[in-house]
Image (cartoon, rainbow, N blue to C red):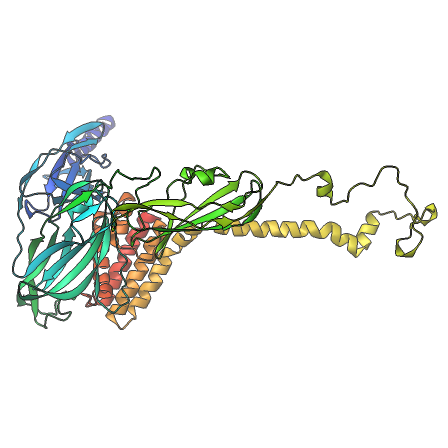
Length: 625
């Protein structure tokens, strides 16, 4: 009877487990392509995602097949979830694994553009997304918005700087603008340089993300077609790399434009409107719609420098150049290093300029040894300075000969040569050090001379052995003599103390960036407390922005002085920071920078912003530890 009862209980328990816990089937591995919008304007950025199901660690897809759009990776994140459902007493647990890759796409042209199927490799398999078709409309300027490109010259030579000016004419309140410049992708045709901007003049400047970096746009006013506009103007320096007629495609600016108002119970949070920082009154809120404005296109004719009369050692320097040289030391022996500093000046923009190899200076190589490594220049104000080490090959060299720099003068249309002045030097033969030199003794006396006893004065030579006194030194003498004790015991003790101190200092400073990173979150918290007690919204926003820059600079081990979101988003994404956190970080940067650089802020409740920043810091700290 007992045996039958036990069997019945066992069967009953098995049945309950079967009915109460039924695991879900294995999740299907698939990849879906998802677009933020299916209809956009040419030059308007939008978010495109590849959502992978069935794997939490897929390989990043190859996006090179997407040729009709420019592609910028925004990061990836895991998208896992689990759920439990009970139906008619049956409990089912469902666990889903997933991963999301996010990209920013910008259409290169108008029409119906295809995003082809993208291969995704996960769990040892290859799966494909479905292709998407995006309708891209042609942007059009209106009476309220116009965008213009200007070139400082339409004809130039290879290597000759040309200034491209971008001016946006604004006749209506805007926010959230974004510039797209296809020209920046032509890295085979141009070197790009950002001109220096003096932001201390009292004029208003905006920090504008552009390509992989940012530019400073200056606010102003101008008339166009008889109408008064507010303007934002910025510049890029173009250094042509190759000859030909280079087409500069239109730049576009996407923005949100004010079209009306609707009733609101509180003041609008948008404090970075273009014309009036306090544009909205209490009780109403602005209504915005998207606008995309195209610029004109341009053509730049780039001519190659002429072959006729071109010097043999011409290295592509175009413009009017000057070259100066300094050397130290100037009194040396054969083989001693001489530091030679060469300063190039003349053109306004020198960042791209290199120094021709000194091995091409025959007068220099005849008398000096030149290293194979090329000097790396450093731009200082209006000069670019190159430092090179040379060594004299023989004694008697009187000078460092003039160093020549051939250049093509675009004003005269001819090749010219800039030269340094000769530098007088003195080169002696290398001195051979003997044993006597090392010992510090004088030359030996002539053989056969006799040593005589000097019998006068303090230098009296005693030749009587009685003057020799027994001076036995033992352990007792060492212990009882303070002098001997200090000489024997003190040096090891001092050595041990110095060694210990050095070890502590080295350990502390072995990785100063690591120490800075450990203290970063504490510094962020302290700075945010200061921001919360600040009465001025603009000052509070400045403190929050500086605190974030200091924190991110320490954690990512980069210079924190002028960090913007574009500087850190890729590094944070690679370290696994979630896309939501990146969006929150971008929003905080935008809101704080609006107050610092545009003279306005949409921060109506600074305590809320401080709490948001502190919460974001806690999330970042978990990932960046």
